Length: 561
Image 1 (cartoon, helix red, strand yellow):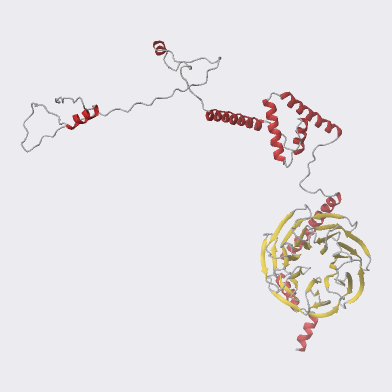
Image 2 (cartoon, helix red, strand yellow):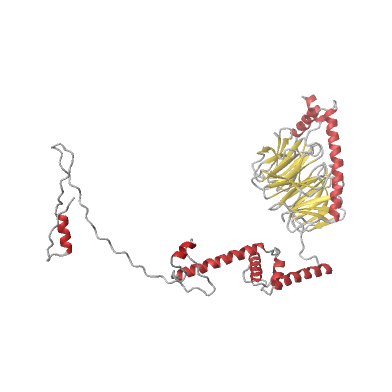
């Protein structure tokens, strides 16, 4: 391709000449080509237009800081031959300028690295964990032992950082001297008989009397459990023993309970009652603080026991002797004889007492109090053997197992607990009631426990399965007390604020008899041995005796009919 030269106009500029050249069509020289069809047009090539290039930007030189005298210049080239052939490039020839931000960033990085190293060293150091030892170490290092608002862990961290700082500054001698002083002081305390920081056990150590009592209770419980099991096996294997017939007889007798007598017990509402172990006496207590003894079955007053300064809350006869114990709101319990003389006075509770119960051996007395504890007392010496905590609210009821090995307590925290008196441990927490539990009683069979409370229900617990067997919707108001028949546990009796007491079969816990007659809240009841008689007391100030007809009366009635 040959381009025709265009004459240049002297008056035109270079740009105009350039536009003129681009507007003129190029002249194509004839070439020798193959013949083409006549209908195919010739396509001219697109001319290339040269475009001017933009100038490169000029970089301003960057001047690095001058090198130190001890620095050695190095070559940027990797090949020694190329350095020899070309000019040598040194650090002075590469000029860079470090900005202020880069310098500050470098300083921050170096500071962070130093802090990280200090933390690593700090974690590697052995720092005392006891706060008193930390204070002593700070004092020996000449540092303040505490700062305003400083807590124990913060004080320990401060000691750690001080030790790291001393280590970085090379003051190891001072640190080692502090260690030597600390060891010398510890050895001096040991020589003087000081044991240093005292370590307290996680339990409260009992007295020697409690240890002897636990041993005595263990021996007694082993003997009683062996007798109970031997009797149960004999009754099971003896062909002459018919357990079902005997149970049916006692339940029929309980179903025939009728009101035998009613007597005014005091000028104020009555709060508790208890039969003597032979059934010849009945003790009652009242809000007036007076406890009275009544002869049975005439219900004639024998003696009045006055010793409390506040209302009496409960009374219980000893299962062995003719002693009785009373509990009062004056935070004391008193042991009396059957003639009305004070034998012992048990003081130690911080709040009013609720219920009281004797251990089956007759040697110990248990008291439940509103100070959230129950206590065990020695009858002979009057000494407090055990102060047992475990309830979050007031303790109201207490009962002992027939073997003497276990104790049960219930309280206003809607909980009943079973305690092993031989070890002092809480072996069972019985949860199920939704309101305060006010009554608890062990069955003579050894494995049933009854509880009653403000939720109007009575629950039967199986100690072998550690669960509730029956929930009895017993009353229409709160249950104030529950008690099993003391001989074999054939039936269960409950007292309630709905002005009634009820008897339940221990076979299937169905109702047998409803004892209606009181005109106010029934506060307590007790059952004589064999179940022939039940005594109830209430806020209507009356004592009511419920007795069953004898076999002779029943036979006489049958003959008359």
